[in-house]
Amino acid sequence: MIKTRFAPSPTGVLHVGGARTALFCWLYSRKTNGKFVLRIEDTDLERSTPESVQAILEAMDWLGLDYDEGPYYQTRCFDRYREVIGQLVEQGHAYFCQCPKQRLEELRKRQMADKQKPRYDGCCRDLGLRPEAGVAMVVRFRNPRQGVVSFTDHVKGEVSVSNQELDDLIIARSDGSPTYNLSVVVDDMDMGITHVLRGDDHVNNTPRQVNILRALDAEVPGYAHVPMILGDDGKRLSKRHGAVGVMEYFEAGYLPEAMLNYLVRLGWSHGDQEIFTRTQMIELFSLDGLNKSASSFNTEKLNWINQQYLMSEPLTNIIGLVKQRLKRLGLAYDETLDLTTVVDLYRQRVSTVNELVDSILYCFQDFTSYDEKAAAKVLKPSALAPLRRLLDRFQALESWDVTEIHAVIEAVTVELEVGMGKVGQPLRVAVTGGSFSPPIDQTVELLGKDRSIARIERAIEYVSVKGGV
Ligand code: GLU
Image (cartoon, rainbow, N blue to C red; front, side, top):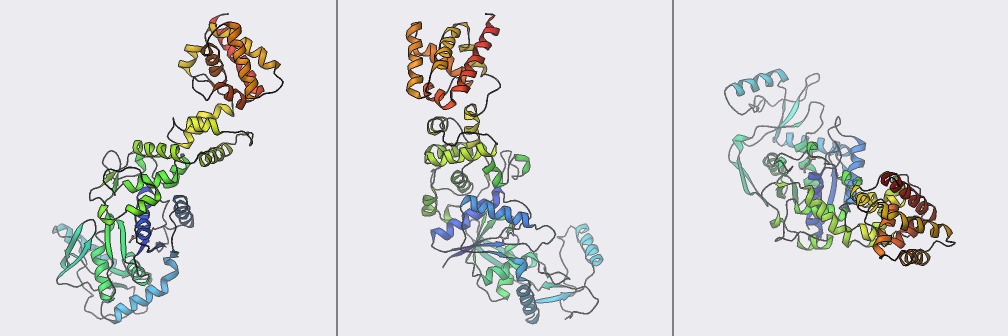
């Protein structure tokens, strides 16, 4: 059975690159009816924080990337790592090294000066040292000196590295704690991971990990190292390019399905198809479709995809999200208000839920200025007569419902012998601040009597002052 794992180090939030790796691991396991493991690599005690763990779990949850096992925490497995380190030493695959920092530092300087790659020279490799009280010792892996280490990578193809390129890496620090390459190997082995999908910043670790796995007589998993994500300037994606934490996209009003769809296309393709539902992604995903070259983050495309999802998502879901945001903005609004028409209308014109909320804010709080173009075109002296008549009639209305409101607007057009536009548009700009809204009678009903009347009065005032009437 295929088993993948996502193994983030909790040293910050889940960023776009990590989320994409998680998605690929998740997709591959779902596609193959395999298992997906979440493993928190928290052995770096100084940089790992519980807040980061929480942030990662929250982001996985938002994206709907559910795992079959875990979260495992590496800090809870130290005994096991110690056991394996001991085993490697016993079997002669690892050895104690007492080279002081200073010696290593000088060695490094010398090698650099000679234009050589800095590497450990194997000073303690054959000394057969045993732990000694009061002597700081690390444990190093006895990397083979001959031959090549090869592995097949689903993205990069066959990768071969000469063992002479690899030095004897430290697998246990002097306090006995395991280093990254050791703990990863032990966990991948113990958890029966069949496929390691990760960013290609790890590709240099893989030959080392393969050698350790072989020393442990463990099965070597399949690998897929996915190319990195660049910002639109061609540089590695970072904070400089804006949001990189996945939850920042939640905050900004993106839908998880759109985010997933966008992420999957950052490094994987299926013909030139752009929109994939979750089910389609699972159906179509394959390691062969992983791209070989780096992909660039493109906010415009993300916006486009999000807008597709805003349109196709069931309206009730979008309304739910809008209400959530209104609450978070601290806006007091009537829970019973039917937002169907406004939300349905505006969702066609915006890219995010936040923009959607912004465009309907006029329903819940007074706007501070009119849309300039709309005001210039519509709030002119000719608007005064319709607005005044509307005001009188609205004030006299006993029940505030769409039929009555509609009748008022119509009566005013008849009285003034003008078309609908000459009455409807001034009313629209007066009550919404702009020239675009759902049918005006419905909008006015939604706004309520007090708010509508106050806004019409304000528009009359505005025209009077501006027009010198
Ligand atoms: N913990 C490593 C990281 O966050 C990933 C290790 C791996 O996937 O092998 O970069």
